[in-house]
Length: 491
Image (cartoon, rainbow, N blue to C red; front, side, top):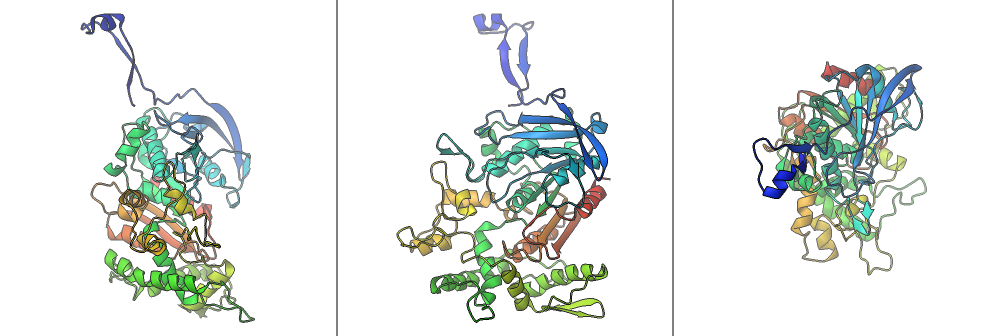
């Protein structure tokens, strides 16, 4: 941990006691070595950026998987003596798989380039940020036949990395009070969890198990692109949204999605479950303070779609090809919602129901999704690769069955919705959330609910939420906009 006893004077060892004059030597095993770096240079939009690269830093005292439990820290040479600069904290998690820290494999970047996931880190260096990127265990991580990365390992690792930064705040350049996390998809979920569950004691046993520093793990801001969150309710949310179009046919009259009778039955059953969940959240719409229910959720989502479309119209875009959108006198006025969902589903087919939690029946000659989903893999155990994680699917596979409590407890830890507004959790005050208007990887209700619950707390100081126009499931786009927001909250 923070201070470990390494050597005691010979007299203490012999006498089993120490005099007042005896010396005890201690060392901080999680200390940051400010001299262990190499100098590198990148260019961003043609301008050279020199930086120190501190790599392969093990951020816990008792790692279980050194393939991932380390971090890289990059410090612009102009900031080596600066203790107030913000820290950009990107993760590369995707599909809840394990992720290594970010590394620079190229040397030239353009802020408008959205194809290289390291571009945002390069831009951060060029704009006066420290960059700290931590690896994290994930659903497929394995050491000697033992799974090391099942939930909640990934978020525990990222919290431990935050604690390392706080533990060494006086030595590492930059301020650990200004950590801005960033992630996409499952990585967006991790960023959302960092922002919502700071210092919650439910994570403490897991953090102690890997020897995390004795420090806080709350962060300053969370940037989350298309976060895959609220997993225990994601299936019912998805079917509530897409059930209305899952019978779509193409121009020849053939089914677009090819769902069979069982899948259609599952879709209907899940759709029926969503009202109880959403209405039970007791959320209030941010635009008019009215209760948010399934009766007005479609209208609420439409308001964000119209805002996104209007932003494009204001930039001079021609949206005449969006036949589901009504534009009058340069104003986006209405959305044919079912036609819009069909447009999204034809661009990238909607998922077969259930969208997230389904192992199928192993005895079936043609089991549905026999290997499960990324999320089924996430909730396995140290010796079990996959598990179901919702009572609906457990009962579907074996009538009368429910998910064991130990799995439900871990599912709870992976959902930021469970921590927002919780007294024991420290909430980040600054949030940037994006979900593309062509992203069908989770229901639009999921990011909308996340945004709404955050705003309902009254604790968020700076919120920037949009449905990104024509964006598919992706992240770190519109970097100029992202960094303008980051600059506004760190001034």
